[in-house]
Image (cartoon, rainbow, N blue to C red):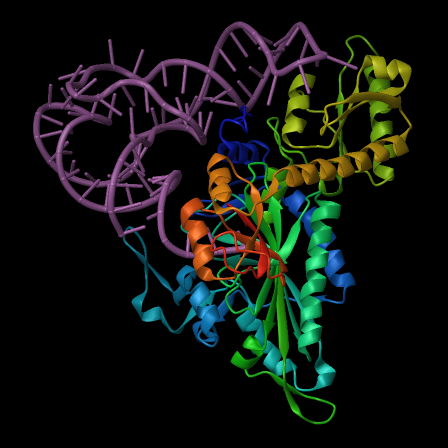
Length: 486
RNA sequence: CGGGAUGUGGCCCAGUCCGGUUAAGGCACUCGCUUUGGGAGCGAGGGAUCGCAGGUUCGAAUCCUGCCAUCCCGACCA
């Protein structure tokens, strides 16, 4: 276990060091791929469990659609093709031939129609919806799937952008525009709750500008979050797709009064990128800081073995504490490896365990526990059977992690109305800049060229003739956030 | 696909310019003893066809040619 680079020295090196050293993930053999290791997967599973519960509780059903999609499906929706054409893995052959010194592709096995490895599943899902939807009685259809997708990326980073990643993608079909829009916004609220209540990550919610929205969507809503380097990370998206996919796949339904009607759609997704967000929002120079609700281990007990004491009784005291915690559904583990206590302290801080309980001779004699919080480093002593006391500390850690991230976001979000100030500020440091925008692509592009910042989201539409665009000085249509993004 | 760099035990790397015994060191690993309240110490041990393929040479990690891979910087992106 090596020492990790300080955040202040090189934030992105800190990020990679932390992931590798905390055992979350490792590089895969193919460029841009990653292996999610057990500790990282356990974290993802906790996130997944929380989100899946909310998805199911709001009426969605899980299903699974194939990885392989006929190429022709992508040709059906023009914008969608445009958006994904440049990053698709394509299957062209079905056989290999063993030759003297290796394998080669059998030219005779060329497929009649090439197959695309899904970059997202709208097309295959809507091809199925066509079969399933004929009457108003069939609607709404509310499907979710947990899957892997492949997007052939040029530059990749662990969790943030890899060629293959895990996510959930929701796909719904509705009888009316209003219902589909309502669904789109309901999902945004679910995502907001996942981030704020479970991951302790404050969020900004808004609409994407045309240049940033999902290929094939009418409207894209996004959950934007601020990392500790003050760059923005889009952590979730929810799309109102209108009738684009319904039309492309010729899906219609018959209403009560026997009229043929178009079907309205939504789609929405959250990926393993949230792990990246969690790392970059909460981590520090010691490593990860995981919010208790999703931590693989909430409490780590580090025994400090006494020299000449009765080891048996000491160990049974420790097991008694661990069992009591586990019985109250607190995820707890005793680190009984033969490393030194100091090593274990650092090891579990690196891995972000919210609470460490130290039990040595002193605690054994006093029947007390020394409790150390990962977020503040503060040590307190509590009675050995005060399980509620531990739960209270976990809750407090969860809350204070959220509030410190929230004040960080607030401190680094500034409102500006002069373009000169915007350029100056963004050349000094990263910020979220709240400003008016006239809605034109020219203004949007100018900011990107001058500062590398983009419109992360549209917070609200403006109907005030006095509001001026920060770029052009013309009448403003929207209040937006400009920021550099991952 | 353009510009730059790098390939040597599991990992980080010295050695390459100027060819010459058994390829050095650190981390990690294994065994033993001593340790254990903030990354333990000592001793012993295992592990490398030096990215691949040719070539030059008495002799190649080192020189030459070709290839491959990875990383960084640009055009694309949840």
